[in-house]
Length: 404
Image (cartoon, rainbow, N blue to C red; front, side, top):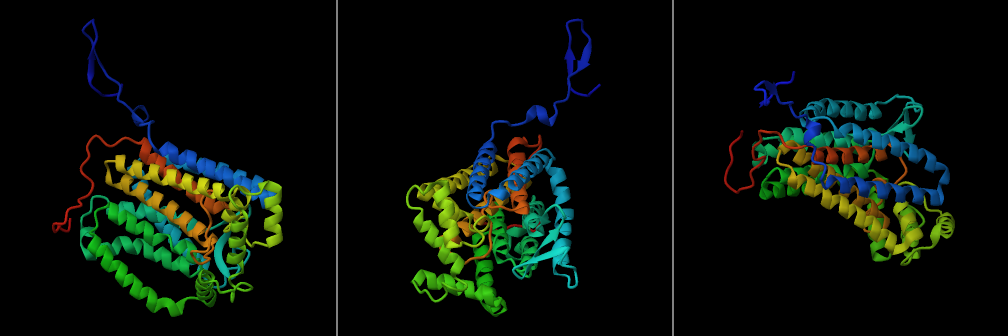
C-alpha cells in the first residue's frame, strides 16, 4: 500500500490515501504549448521551402523531424534533479567530441571536412555535428551551476558560468564555425541577468570582451575577415566583393528583394533561386527562399512565429518559481531567438555571412534535433509543477551579497 493521509470510511476503518504522482499534478495549461505549435509551423514552412529547391531532401528532413519530436518528448518527462545530474556528464561528452574534431590525423571518413571546416562526425546513416549538442549542454550546465548560488552577484563570481560558455565556444571557433560560436555568450548573459547578476559587472565583462575581441582580430582567418569587409561594403553600396566573398550575400539580397510583398509561388520561386545560383539555399540561406516564395508576408509570418516562441518561452520562465528550470527556459529561448536573428540578419545583409542555420526551417539533422530538444526542455519546465518546498530563486537588489 502507498503511504499517505488516512481516509476514514463509514465503517470506521482507515485506508491510506493514494500518493499523487507527478503526472497527476501536470500543469497542462502552460504557454509552453505555444512554443511547440510555433516550432511545428516553422518546421512545416521549412519543409515547403526545401521542397521549392531540393525536393529530394524532403523525405529525409521529415524523418529527422520525427527523430526531433521523439527527442523532445524524451526530455519532457525527466525530473529537474535528473536534468541537473546529467548536465555535467553531457558537457564533458560534448567537450570530448569537440576536441576529437580537431585531432590531427583522424580520417576524413570519420570526420568529414566541408569547405575547410571540420564540424561533422560520420555516423554512416547521417552526419552528427557536436556543436549543436553543445548548445543544449551549455544551457543545462550554466543553469545547474547558478542554481541557488549568490557569488555571481560579484564580478569574480561571473567567471565560472562564463567559462562554461567560453570553453566550448573556443573549440567551435577552431573548427571553424563562427556562427554557432556567436550564440554562446548572448545565452550566458541572458541567464546571468535572469539569475540576478549586476548590470555594472556584466558591463565590465562586455567592455573587457570588446577589448579582447579587438586584440584577437588578427587571429581571424582570412575568409572571416573578408566576410566582415564584404558586409560593410554591401552596406555602403560597394560592389568590390560581389563576385568573390560577397557573392552569397548579394545573391540572397537579390532574391529577398525579388520576393516583393506576396512572393511568386512554388514553381516561379524555384526558377528564380536556380537562375540566381544561390549557394546553400536549402540550408543557411533558406530564409531567402521563404521570401522569394511568399514575399514580405512570408518573412513577417516567420518572424512572428519566432516572436510567439520567444514570448511563450519567457512566460514559461516567469511562471516558474524554481531556479534551475527558470534558467533553462531563459537559456533555451535566448539561444533559439539569437540563432534566428543571426541567420535572417545575414540573409538580408545586416550581418556577415557566418554559416548559421535557421532553427526548425533549414535542412540538417543535428540542427533540427537540437532545436527540438530545446523545445522539449521548455515543455518540461512548463508542464512540471514546482516542488512542495521551494524558495525564492534569486535576488535582484543592489545591496552587497555574500559568497554563498
